[in-house]
Length: 267
Length: 272
Image (cartoon, rainbow over the protein chains, first blue to last red):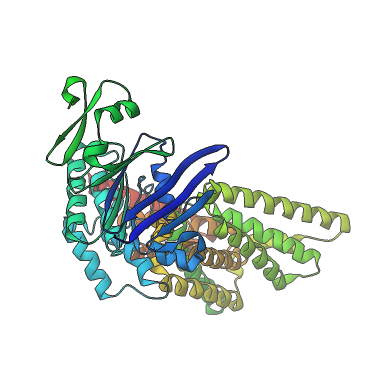
């Protein structure tokens, strides 16, 4: 049996009188890729924030990369976060400071390097390697605010990867992107997962974003798990109709999934 | 005839104030918190008011003023906007109103006790034309402390400027570094208020960076250019003042704003 990268027991997040997330027994194995699906407000982002211990009002036990996060002090949680690459759903509001793409990627080395130590040659080499690997080299000297939304997403993925993380948390990495950029980002995620030992949790609400390498889907609705299993078992027309309304169906081809209306979606 | 004894401290003080405010401006504009100037000024005022009521006067009033501004900086740094669900500017608004309220309550006691309050009122409205070498050394020491801090924690500051929340998520000790920066900022501004004056500080913690950000990409270049613009604004303002007999503070402020205008126009022309 694989060691767990994430293990939750009776995890509950309560805001006021509302329970916004509840997971009885939940586990993600090391090296597994899990997609968290569900409509808006299902608790997907809350789940990621729990793993980073950035969510308040959390009850229950959460273990991440072998550490009980509630037992960690500020130094311990900082050290744990350095082992996790996080790509947030919302792009940082355009900072007034004209940081270059290379500088933004280098932020990923900042925590890992630690206080009072400057980034060294090896750090910058890693930064440049990831910039090149994600096809950002021509943009390296440009301002982060001057590039497109898709290029900014890639920059944030590069920033997460230079941390050399054991676990990658992607929160709707294709939000607000056009079809072309969506496909490029899905391709990047698929390639990353296949090329290195990495536990990936991908949050999305569109099936089209699931890369072919994704083996497991957890479906959330109103904070609770409604389905958990292999994509072929979970992604059925019945489930999609239950979540998003009648008249929708699921089509699968070459490891990719789409939701289509009417007869086109009937499988 | 150029009087070295008089102009020496004025010009060096202007250079130090301009360059250090230019450095500050990069982070203040970068974080979109120019209101910090007003916030720190009133916290320093509140500190000085109660220091004066406790019997301090003259240069000694700087100590309670520093106490007030540093306390405010500490509160601002430790208050995490994400956890409080409040923008940093709203938090500053709250701190400003509290410190201003405290200061005016204190002023009320001066009237009740029948004591003069002009020493306190003069604290925020100094003039470089009356700067002494001891003032300049104090300003230089505060500026050097800030410069060393930015050199040592430059990579963390860059991450915080990009996104404080993302920095925390990446395991960066954002709160500690940001609080340390704000404390040094408050100390530098308080020292400068009594020598340079509030009006100039408010301008110089915004305009140099606003101009630099129009022209260059990358944090290092932005810092260097903002420091240069700050220094040029101060020295240029003094030269123009000497030629025209117009008050130097006003000329420095207008010159720094003019540089922003020229930089914005230059960028617009280059883009077109």
